Image (cartoon, rainbow, N blue to C red; front, top):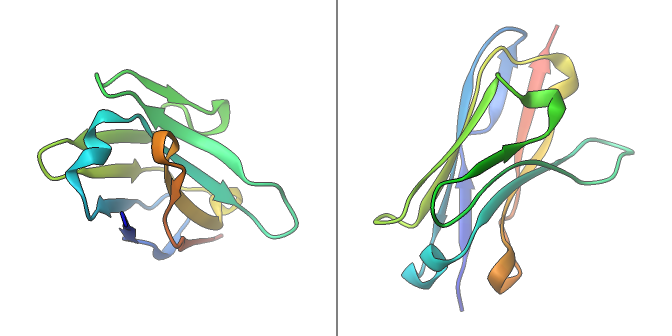
Length: 113
């Protein structure tokens, strides 16, 4: 069974940066696109960024020019670099491998004003 393990969340002041990582336990996931989602209290889970197997990226309007998604297929790891963080970015962040319907356990990101 394939597992996704996320890391890198935490508490940061507005304007700061964090880098999230999501590592898969099996290399098979490297054939799939990946995505990062987030869910704030009382809100629906939303797609933040995605990246195809070939490296094509897509971002939610709210994070464009601030967040960068990348992947390392050799390490079966995907990253989310988050810069210029805002309090409204506070949420639990989840990585997702849609081809295998896999979700990480979530990592909390809290941005203080």
